[in-house]
Image (cartoon, rainbow, N blue to C red; front, side, top):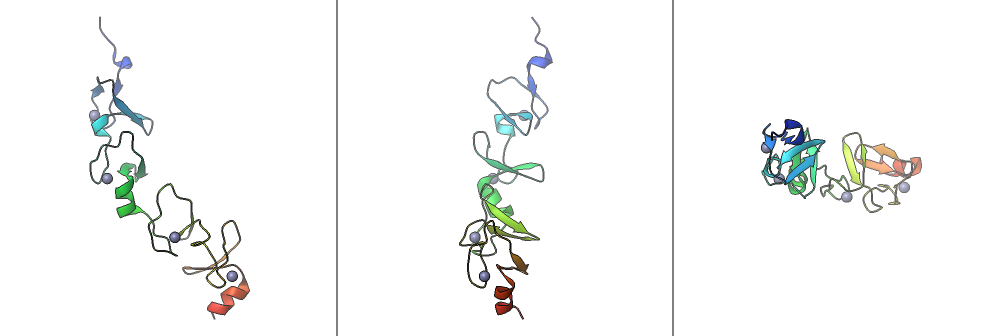
Length: 132
Ligand SMILES: [Zn+2]
Ligand SMILES: [Zn+2]
Ligand SMILES: [Zn+2]
Ligand SMILES: [Zn+2]
């Protein structure tokens, strides 16, 4: 009996049919376990989390090292699954200790804010106190 190609999936990495019962489905495509790996360090990504960066899968440690945005407030990398706020080229952790007024320090999470370069302000009054 001949098995048609339709019963097997084709690996999006090497373009060969996948005969193994173990494979990865990611980004709406099928992959041999070892063909879905981090673009940076080649670690196998099956069962671990990854981030698509320029259509290439990258493991979370590599992402954090090479691609993650740094929080303007605490200067730490923002994890790919972390809540964050971006404005222009800048990003902040969406936490009261990072995303807050540069003047009075009040949390700006979910609030209106006035950006000035890398600073954020809750009000014109706070902005005037630091920026002339
Ligand atoms: Zn493959
Ligand atoms: Zn990696
Ligand atoms: Zn931060
Ligand atoms: Zn303020």
